[in-house]
Length: 104
Image 1 (cartoon, rainbow, N blue to C red):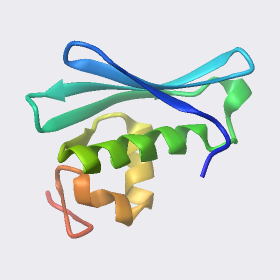
Image 2: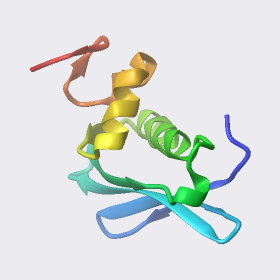
Image 3: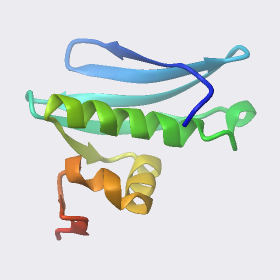
């Protein structure tokens, strides 16, 4: 999907996904809730990288990793939440969605 490299940096209960292009850095941060849930807190893409699909690629990588690790995503970040709502095929790992239908 992307022509850039996404790096994952894990810390003690927190982490982020990072893309670095031409001296600019985009990131999506997350916080672990126990061992089975990951809150997407924030997605930030500088103006210089907008329109290149960087933000969407960051969210997709988070979804793919959650799926591979058996973790549920809680999208508190408005950007991540909007991307997930646009992609029903991502919603299987999102807490609050069941078979693509949002639970209230």
